[in-house]
Image 1 (tube, one colour):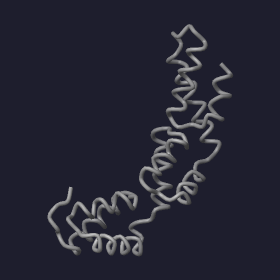
Image 2 (image 1 turned 90 degrees about the horizontal axis):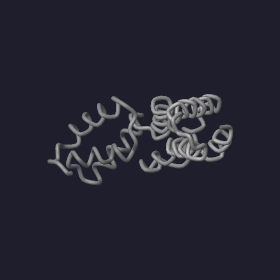
Image 3 (image 1 turned 30 degrees about the vertical axis):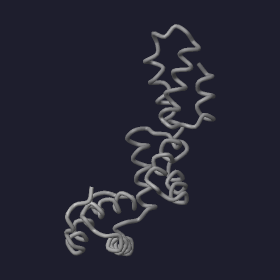
Length: 155
């Protein structure tokens, strides 16, 4: 995992490009710096500089991540929260990111996914099995059980 030490100046230029290309979490940026063969003190110093120069911003990362996963992959808030925690994002930033997702868009997405999934379950004769499969799918996508249950009951 640890490569040859490339030096802090070269590492700084590379990591700035890495962060400018797309929003990054502190954790993945730290791992990338270590992959350059840097020692802990150098990594911490460069991280501080990146934050100071606004190349790295955890809240901005969390908002971009949550918005992207919701819009592109139709993930629910439960799954987004879990993935952000896996990336060691602070609870404050996670809450800020989830707040950015419009409740109307969120519910519309949930209904759209439920309708689409029901079309694939047309061949399932057993109503109980159809409901169970729909519920499992929506929960797996990361939507809250409190929002999924009423939709499943409507069938």
